[in-house]
Length: 464
Image (cartoon, rainbow, N blue to C red; front, top):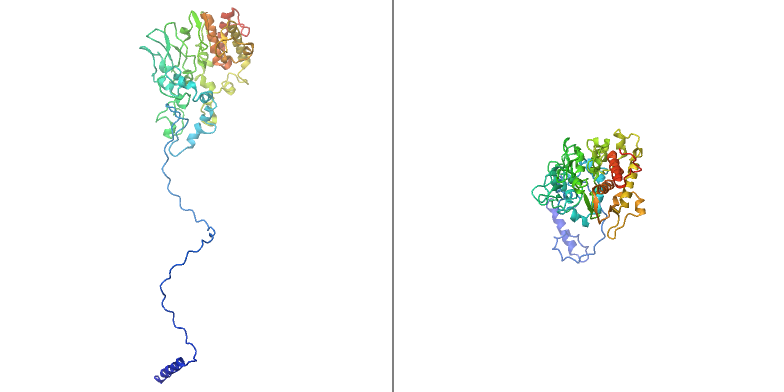
């Protein structure tokens, strides 16, 4: 049985395959895959697919190294305005008190110091102000630092007696004449800037130390101790150049170093004077000569006094740099005086402007009387060049005293007449209408007008 069944199955298969009309057998298994054919031509590029969803953000990488410091502020070689920031960039300590929207830098940009810098940036004056002249002692960005160090140029063997305290004049040993020392630096930038007034080095510059500002950490260039003096050029006698101590005004000494006449009136006014130039007289901005009550031409036999303003510890600073509470109490660097300071001082509690009890108006009236008397003598002009002319009625109608200049060409002017002209220019260029030292200003006006007209000024009928 086991051998018969397979044999019959085989015979059946043979018969089926040999028949001419038999059906096709079942398909055999697939053969092995043949070799790949030659690739066909590349088809056209299909349309781009839609953008897939964004993946998850990766982990934050490590912080890169801090970038290098930017360029420093106005440099001695004429660099632009810029500030160094501490490593890590601008911090809150930089914003207060200096770089905030209402900080010291922005205040300074509203000041006359900044306006003068911008108005003359790249101008013809800059070369003079920063050259080897007397101008650079105040106008060059680093002028004060050289003077404090005693490094000035002079002719002969001896320079200014009190050069480290601000004096610029000296008695030249070569010709025995009063001469101005000159600037020794090489700056090409004429600006009163942060580093002009403040002493900056690697230990005091917050841009380099990265430390927040604290009182005393950014000291002034000039001596500011309670007994430290700043000097005016006015000497004690003819033929000497010893200057005059302006008084110990601590931080106010910084202002006195530059805001003065730059003339030694004791030696400048002689028995017979020649008005040789429109630039005759005190330099512009001689506020310290007035404020201290010491810099004017004093008439023989007269005693000159001062007002209570001269008792302020920091002098000019106390009025011109009112503390800003929101700025760490640092003084306002616009240097604009504020009536609120007069009120808080306990002196003028009810004042609403600087014309306290009409005092400023009276002094301006006195300055005007002096102006008219000088113009009647032919001493004043506003002409830029020859032919010169006296002040016109329209000129005399204004109170732009500071624009008046000396009519050149008059010789043999007596000391008292030249002194009256000098005093007028001192008051005109010192601005403020006399409020810096009301008592002293009235005395100068009275004595000067009386010297010219032999009568008291109508606005000040009696000498204070």
